[in-house]
Length: 317
Image 1 (cartoon, rainbow, N blue to C red):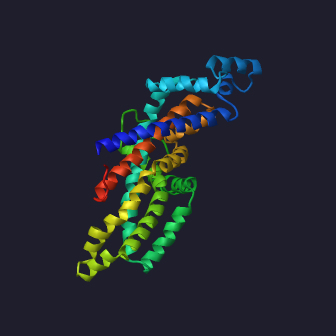
Image 2: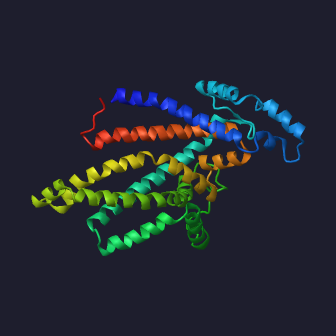
Image 3: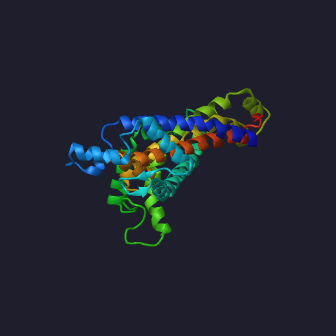
């Protein structure tokens, strides 16, 4: 297992390099740049050229990338000239909030999607299965920003059960857990709704397929209770392909967090990414790309390790 993890981490290095090179090129061919944001809208071409030279952005791209990569090897993600703060410090301030949001959404999605998918499969083609499928397809087709806006209008503005947005109550200076949980519920629900809908359909289909296998029919013919067949034999095999889906969910969750955090003014990585893209803050965008790529690689590695836990036939030699 240890050798397998080390090999996977070594193979992740060229993947990470490819992601950073692609991101670096895409950022630099985009119109505008940090020099325009720093110099201001009324700056002359000469002033913009001077700021560009001071930032080193007039150097060849390979040279800029080599300098950035050398700093990255030493743990330096660069300096945000827009926010006048080291990128590592910016990410350290925002990353915990996003990890809490994504972790809560992931936990809620798993706790709702698996029971729903299993129950639908066990009641295949029943009235509950058909009704649940309709609601699942509706939830699946809803854009994240639209669902978040509906939650705000219903539960924040109408019923006043939850705050509209933010991290915690503005007039509270100390760390306030109840306030933070109240502020977290609607963003996490918004981020989780699409995953619940998609995953429950996936688990339902996988469960139905496994229930038709010979081993499941044999277990039923032997007189085992339906609940034992369902949860002890069928569910374990049905979850194996789901783990692959779960391992690759980090990019989708982060993409959803960018929109969700904007809707609820939630100060996380998604909101920072949006602001950095608007400001053409190259250093922050590159730093966040590295962190996000690392999270994706670790998520896929965790999924591969979980294979061995769920399926004893998997060997890592």
